[in-house]
Amino acid sequence: MLSYPVPARAASVSAGMIVAVPLELVASPLKSGRDLDGADRSALVVGGTKAIGTRDDVVFCKVVVVADAQVRRDGQVRAKGSPVHHATLGPLEAAAVPGVVSGIAEDAGLDGRFVKGERERLLARAFMIRVIVLMTLMPDARLQDAVAALAGDLALVPWAKPWRPASARAAGKWRSALGPAPLEELRDTVLGASWHRHQGEGCPGAVTVGKSRPLKAGAIDGTLIRVPDTPANRAFFGSVGTGDDSSPFPQARALPVTCCSCRALFAIPHGPAGTGKAAAEQSLLDEALRDCPVLLAPDWIWLMDRNYHGAPRIARMTERTHVLIRLKSDIPLRRTSEILPDGSYRAELSGDGVTVPVRVIEYFADVEGQDVPEMFCLVTDLMDWGEYPAPELAALYRWRWDGSETALREAKAPLRGAGPGTGPMLRSGSPGLARQELAAWAAGTAMTRGVILAAARTARPARKGRRAGLEVRPRDLSFARALRAVLSAIRLGHDRFQALTREISGLRNVVDRDRHRARKSKSPSPFPHATAKDTATRIAPAIITMANAPA
Image: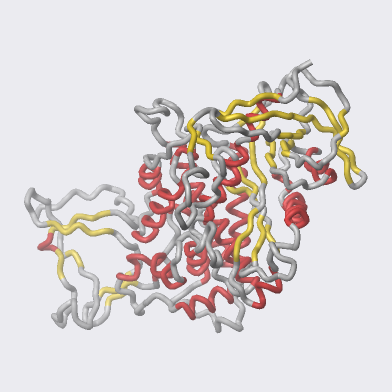
């Protein structure tokens, strides 16, 4: 009988591969002869091999899993183990730190009040960690939907012990048994890896400022995330907007630290909403400076909005890194120099017994056909006006919106009720599980950004259009469409990372179009506007004019 030659080293087989088998060689191993659609469930087997000819009937099979076989007396062929021991987040884990979830799961303890013993057939620690991450990336999905999506085709395999997706109640108990610690460890590991990757390899199309000593740009800004209105959540998180805590939902406040170039997340301290935005975000910035000192790198400049963090904090940051901060009009400055040749001037920023020397950049940003009477006032610790001219720093500041607001809008899209909605964004009814969910959301978002970054690095430049022949940047690729491709790969069990990044590299955004609106929109409105006045879009470059004439 003719057969295909077998190489000295057999080809490796992994999930997602397609295998071609002649139809007549596929047979049932059952000795009883019962129909495979009946009560007995067994895998089919291949009876032999021969060369495949044109027009032969061939069965194309997708490899779902490679596992040890268990053959019963009646001939049934089943797989040992369970889907919970084989399911992974596929491309997300490959883009982050391979093997990190399994390593964390080995050391994770389970609260015995919720899960008794170590029986892991329907659920397991590593599987549940992955489920929690996956549920934060699936809009409006129930917890059991995330379980089924993670298992994917593994649920169709005839396992030695029958497996079915765990119920919402069982999955909820496992969430409580795990607690927030394993997910927070995963978040810290993934975000740390993202930071070190940017420090080492950087990212395509990095946003920088400086001539001989370029600085990479990052952004720091706060955001609110609504949580379910339970007594425990309201007591812990509180709410903003009213003095009597009568807001419809409690809110968690977070302070994401992101990259302006690719919107990657580096840190996300969070806590209760607090009674005041300024005080709450100042506390979170203190936490970031204490727990993530590596972010205070000398080759970065951090862009911050008008929520003034105080002279002592600015002084602590500028000891090791650089800042570019927009000031409110009521923050006093004491001028200490004449107008410099680039239109900036030196001054002192004081408060709480601390005085910080700064350089002040004042400018106007005008768009054709739009009146913008407001003057922008930026302060920075970069005193060398020749190396870092004021017009370049003014042009750099616009990237704060891209690094913070646009990045947050994309990251919040998978959360339920994101935008100007009326419901909670998270589903956790207790502060501990809310911490767990926030950590999972941060890890999942960072992993997705990692896949997009890998896709950008291997993408081919466009052959035509405005970006023809230019390097592909991560912000040129669609986050929403990339996330859908990642979720599809997880459901189908594909672990071919290069094939996925090749697909994502073609999902291009149209960017840098100089589009402007009279009013910024952080999220799409659920209702049509009454008039087109506020939504009229202008396509024109923003012209920066220095407020002070150079000396």
